Length: 354
Ligand code: CP3
Image 1 (cartoon, rainbow, N blue to C red):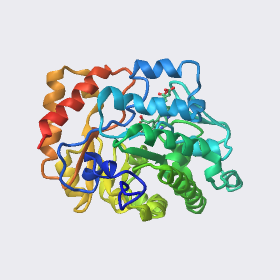
Image 2: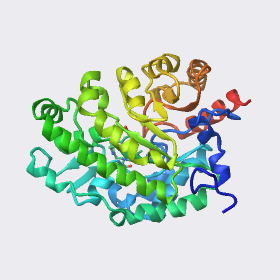
Image 3: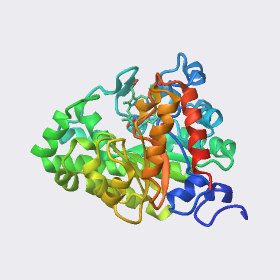
Image 4: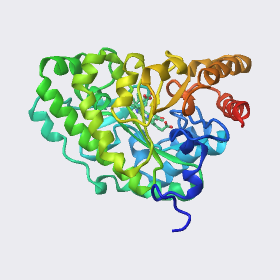
């Protein structure tokens, strides 16, 4: 229709929103802000609607997903919504026996350790996740011009849960497979790349304006191992969605030494944690990419004055960037005062108004 943008099915007002412009490295009226894990336990209204509903079940109820996704947009006035789900949802959808344990994270009943185990990773079809298509349809109607970010876990981070069987600090089983049986590892990551790509396509076709690929735990690897054993699978995911023209964001924790490679994997926007200042991150990533980040989430436990000083430092470091999306360096912590987040959004908007 006349009010749809050339680059997809989204309304022109969404296409022209500050978040989308910053991702495309175009001039913006103010620096856009959103927060990883902005929907979640930091919000009392989230805890209320989630009461008694297990995490994975909540991800499969379109009305609940819509409500939870909208909560931080209403409360904080952030510049983008992130689809409420979890990185293990597509794995559950293809029939793996896994659960999200409160206070622990994803737990896989039978870890993937052998070639025979790969047979359990079948392709994902849109019908497997019809609740996602339905929820995004509801959401894009409610969101108006505010863009919706779809997301998925990257092959390495998904593999870390599947091979370990749950959260890990050392990734010893996953790395043992990567170092010791590179062919099995490559086949596992390739299977996960196909599942991830299919899951992102469902979200984009349903109306997501941008996508973020979370490789949260890939900072555990040396650059040479990333390049050899992980990058091909992440490249495959990004290439699979390149044709849609939606911005592709790529983020991991502790990835200072990998930023260039993660950008080269096919991201339009590179997410940076708090360990590398954004001006230095821009030098590492090189031209042609926007950056996202990177206030240390624990700064929000300090006074408003300290939050503002630290936010100014982030904005100053971002002053020369081609495009900047303000975010935390990792997710919102559940115990944070949500008013501190609302004040932070206002502060960034006011401080960067042009
Ligand atoms: O607002 C948003 O960012 C969207 C929601 C979102 C969730 N998970 C909801 C969730 C997103 C983007 C994720 C992605 C995700 N899940 C990642 C990548 C992002 C990151 O933080 O690095 C990872 C590694 C996971 C795996 C996972 N799921 C973990 C580590 C946990 C936390 C376990 C706990 O209880 O502390 C989960 C569960 C989870 N996913 C919760 C939420 C809101 C908490 C469970 C609950 O509220 O009941």
